[in-house]
Image (tube, rainbow, N blue to C red; front, side, top):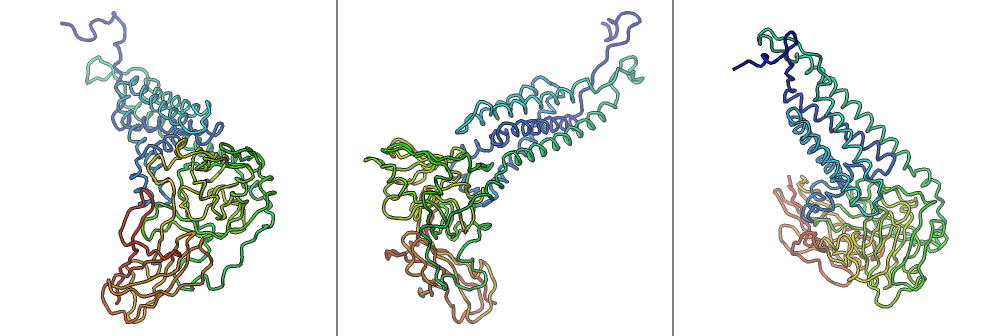
Length: 534
């Protein structure tokens, strides 16, 4: 038997044995490769489309593929921060996977590189699977995969190692010195820093290239041909802690699936109306403004609301009449739904019968006297009183198709939600807050109720399951708006108490007591809060 150096030619240096990076250093190298992937992907997306970014594309695919119960849980648990949580989760999973691949690369560099490439392929698939995808949408994922593999190959390979040196403890067998570990750590840290800078710069560039704030500020809204009547002075109850009757635009809720906001220049925007109509139409933004605008005071609510939930708001909308546009196009016999499509591919279906029954549905261009904010659908969205947003509120609207129920299932209907979307009667106790401590004696209870397009006729309050008492309603501003109410709870005694509220809509139907979840057609049940009198 011979030793490992006996086959070396006489006078030659013994062959060096390359020592793999330690697990911690290898994991850091994997993280650096992932950072390079994110930076390269964001840079490529800045020159193609922001929604083609691998992280955004995978996040959007996750939203689409997630079970309905998971979506509902995310909205209830995280509210409007659900997208931030999703992206944070994606980055966390990516980091853990990258660290594991880094460790693998210390032993099998080719296998780790192949898996990084596979992740790039997943991003490309997610980007190309999106509605309205373009062939160039695969470029950010390709750049991400290329950047990850290149950095990984460099950091865990021999490039950072010097020539062999002899270790006296091993006789004549040379090994790599400890120096490469330190160089790998420094190189990985520098790579992560450079990737972060690149990704940040790419995001800034992307935001600037897609910025429509100047175009939005330049919009000149004509005065409405049909202004809304003044709201009654007493429409809002003056109780501390009660939301204002008109929701400030900055406080208006936002629930949608868009990880990146579509940014549309109104100068290039157009709306196509087609399908089962006699006269298809294509109109630009100036054409829309020239149709003659009207105002609509309306309370919009989200079907994701649990009983007593926060996803409802009232605003003064301004827009062109959607029913008038449909009549101009000539809706054919047999038409059943109008499917609106957003620029990002979201589809929302509204029953045609509902749109043509006399209610004032709008192609809205403004809210509370200003052009729509980007997050609320600039430059145009639909608003239909009496329906939840998922069947009435297409933001970033670019297409309207008149069709049948059998021919097309819009986004939410495909996921099992009711296709009509009629708003359920809801009442909410806003004051006192849940688990509040209140003084004994007379306690003010106040809240908000809505049953849009039917109106609110009465609200009742009870304490600890006792008799129902009529609440005092604020002035009625119309059936399409919520109604605020107050009630004086007299003789509140020390202890813990449960307050409940229920509403009666304009048709005389009392809000049902049975609790049901939002899925598939909106939550039902009486809202209650527990307070302590002390």
